[in-house]
Image 1 (cartoon, one colour):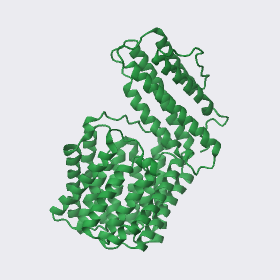
Image 2: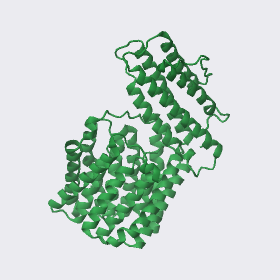
Image 3: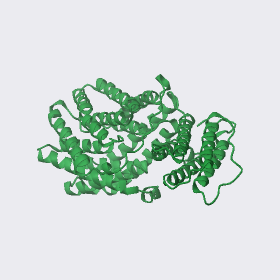
Length: 496
């Protein structure tokens, strides 16, 4: 876990800049709320709104990110109003909370923007429970949210918009389907059922802090698509919470709400959340838990009993998520992983076809965007396979096959990158053998995805022709992939 965080590559120091900008944006938002004369409740609301605006908005283009950021208050303020209005009506409040959970997950069908707005809506309702917001506080909370989102936007799009210098990332479209065949629809039902369990049991554990259980269930469902992914994420959330609570006992408790020390430690936590989110959910949850402890210290209610209660409520939420994905319209790891692998292989096919056009002299042929798309698709494959290669997975045979598939897909990606890099050279050879080899790669992908035989040309590549070397390496990797993908059970991942 330590290695994953501190040794993970950070091209262009993107994670470092992401974390540093978040500290700046959240700090400025809290300062603006303070200068506006807001109370501690308003400042906390504003800081969390800025954090969400900087963290959840992930559109592919800067323009898209700006539009989504502008829409956050339009979604969050009505939810905040409902939460405050229903504060004294527990049954209606609980039903509204579950409706927000379901709608927030279902909104993922509209891509990154739907995901961002769904998360912001949920967290707005959650923060209202966290702060026990009432209708008389609404004007201040409205102002805090608007000022903080505006401040975060000024930092992100004006003061430090490093994304303008980066190529827009290729964002794979979410799995399709209609009705209950759509993963987002099934997950919306699962999340609502899991949150309902967490809400009821969480209230039995604590009538004051029950919303922690609902929050745990919600965040376990974020960025997952299958049963295995959700279960692994639940384990990691619980582990991160345990470590964060242990850290809170030695860090947050002694601070005892001291404003200056709390501000410094909170800034470190914000940086930690943003810096580690991309590489370790456990570490991210560690920082989130410590940040929550520091905020409770500011509110004057932090104690060992509260930290123990947070652990108990997190366990309830994790249990609710686990029961939901196992019992309610389960989405198997096999079905999701197989879909992402098929899409990755089709992208390899597209890379080979575009490279063939480039080598044939087509001026408009550019395989580079396909390579970027392939990297994103392979990231999704790794995420979906993570439950099978997890150290706690007892099915060793399936774990070995899953690792073999990942290794071979990485081989394909490496050969494709080399192929595209060489083909980009204007002096690259354009002889007929290259086009023939590209067509063989296309045929190999078609055979692999449609159940035919994958054949490899007997003659090896010449050491003086790197394009042919990459093409033959890609052929061999595809031929090897045929074995683990065609086990008697239909897939190395079947049954997961």
